[in-house]
Length: 304
Image (cartoon, rainbow, N blue to C red; front, side, top):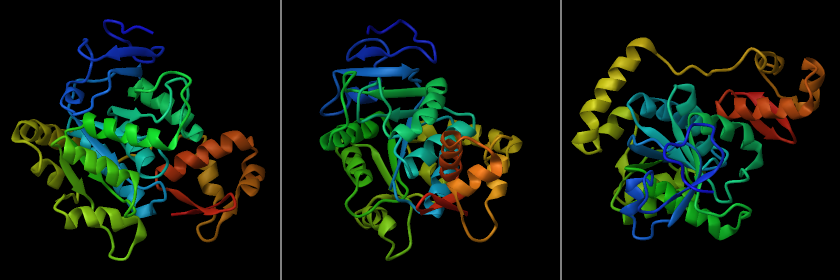
């Protein structure tokens, strides 16, 4: 694979080498930059904000990540995250639903998607941003590869925001990399005693900036970013009061089949909607990412 002059969106995988055109400038300011990136999609030159957090997040955390990412792209930034379930996926979807761009960094080769349940989400990202990795095609996921992935997330972004994270977590590691690279680190405060917020709260105790929304985020960025970002955000809000969930008509019967109280199994939903189980599971994953439903275990779901 060789780097084209201007890679079109939805392109086949290609490479961008360090010191070549198209290599993201912030990566050069890392202490350990990747020598090559494998890319699907298009890496925008717009400034980037990383939004990361727990896979096992709360419904509150998922909604915060979704809404924050939407406001970030409305302010003219690109959202960077790791495509993991939970906060990462909610951040990608929030950016896409708001009409913005997002970059997903993989812990594996560019010829696969991890986790596999996010194949459809990855395709959306390629069409409106990029999926990137430093790992050669055919490289499978290893425990250490998440650390390498996390450093690139931090390196691509001007700031990293941790929404929810356990005390020992990949999101905290990403934040630590951001500090090493002299980037801004912020965290969303969570309930005292909450396991999923312990990492974010500890970052705040260690001096991370408090992020309670787009205004507080912008206030902690260099002024060169903020003035233009605030103008874009004000203009976008005139036309959009709230984030649109973007649920298509085909998925609405699935949501309507889940009772207002109690839960419903995948088998019951398949019978009620006559949808193939594979397609149904993809829809349920998408609705869970959007914060509309949550899994209660044993392939059973309830409304949020």
